[in-house]
Image (cartoon, rainbow, N blue to C red):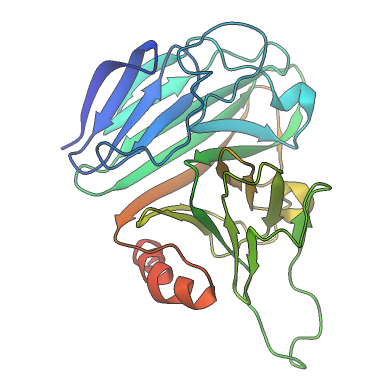
Length: 304
């Protein structure tokens, strides 16, 4: 059974705690929308930034940690609008709905509907962006999850094929100017890219890809966190067609999914859904064979 209670957490007095006895989560309402805690009892799978915890108000953007909602493409003016003010909390089915006041600079309003399965370590997040401008806006819903340090992300590549049957390119890998392909945190496999979070290496690194398989994962401390999402074939995505991206520095690793770029009319909205799953007893992978042997069987369970 899913239980929803009010608690204080991290210096914020008005947080919402949701639990089904297997996993639990904490949603802030003094700032947000933010999902600041998710995991098995006593261990947060998400990164937190202690210097930001408990803070409210102000005009500067704060990372806080946890899971947040942005809209792409990324720019300083639209992306880093602070989420330092209280949000509206409404009860939902097996969870809650949190609604941010309309951003004053972009006139976009962010919402999350968060539902926890009554008897499984499974969480569903419906992200919603509403356009309150007097004109249409092109944007993509962008869901970012800051994972706790010390783990490895798994990013599946599009299906491979043999030569000479497949003569034309079938996919792109998106690189940022600060991405170093020789960085030892990266492991290049035939079917998957692995990105390791290393607290001793502060340099930022990011890659993106079209991920038609609709999943990405993060393995840490024998736990496997997986998010699934809908990849729309033929749709236009930001960042040279990326529906999934991963970023790391010395403090965290982010698993990010994006919806298609959408022309949103005044008063219209766009939605993007992620489903989260958590397992115990899954070792951290170091190569494609590890992913095939221990992670893909779990992923296939939830995608079937």
